[in-house]
Image (cartoon, rainbow, N blue to C red; front, side):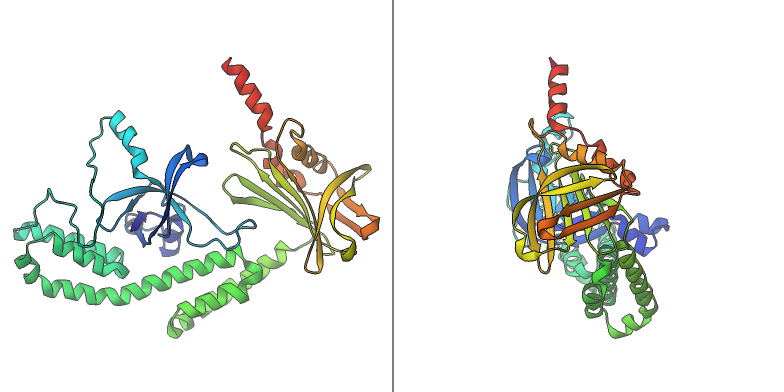
Length: 405
């Protein structure tokens, strides 16, 4: 199974300003993991979960089976985050059968395969093998383009060439085929090393504080010593940037925010003692308005933290209690509250965020567990703006219903 597309990150690393690079698709190979039916977040469509790597830029591209038939449309991936920190190799494509009604409605001709794909199967039964030198030359050009674009899949390119030309013509071209197969070996090594370095850069950007334990060792295992030596200056530069990013990420009093995954917005600020306020909000879709408010890594009397407690929140001179679920995490203490939009608690999280964005400092205090943490609210309004704009789901649904009536 193969996914084809134009991931932007690959073009950036390869020097995406060159037109020749932008015109060459990227290929990734994997296997089908399972078929998901009636996925609600995808309009009740069928999805194919697979392991062929796709990234932003692949979306809309085809997913092929081993017989070269389109079986899906590349759509989305699952990336590691605070909810699924160990997610790896989880990618989704819309089942191609979902496209059939649209094609028929728009009078677009499509040939539908009614046989399962089996090894060695030639799905182009209506196309006779090339029997002339001119026709063979065109197939050979496609083989050359295939092996140049995806040198690690040379055997696949070769097998397709052999299937699509007459045996005597394939035999006459054997020396040229072998030459290109031999040349693809070093190119495959370069491709794998380039992919390893791309993963390394992504790791350094996403996990700067664990660089020396994760990103660096993984790259060292993937690259040959001579290649690693050539890249040592770049390696040191990325490490230095990761260290700076880690220090910045934990700098007290500075709000940082961003989309951690589609439609999920996270904002965070730390204080001098290392504690942090974290807001995670659903900013679009059917669950817009849901979210989590957390106090992370705070100090207190660990043995007395359990269950739900009333914690006093003071914003400048304004004060009110919050009912927070208190838990322990190693030697640290955490407090949180999950908000689900409903008729009884519509917009509660949004109202809390609104209060925070108009103050200069906020303090959380609970004497019985020795909790007393203060955080700066400078910059909170900008960091939490997407959460403030999130719709009240129930209210919006009611408005939509009234408009339909």
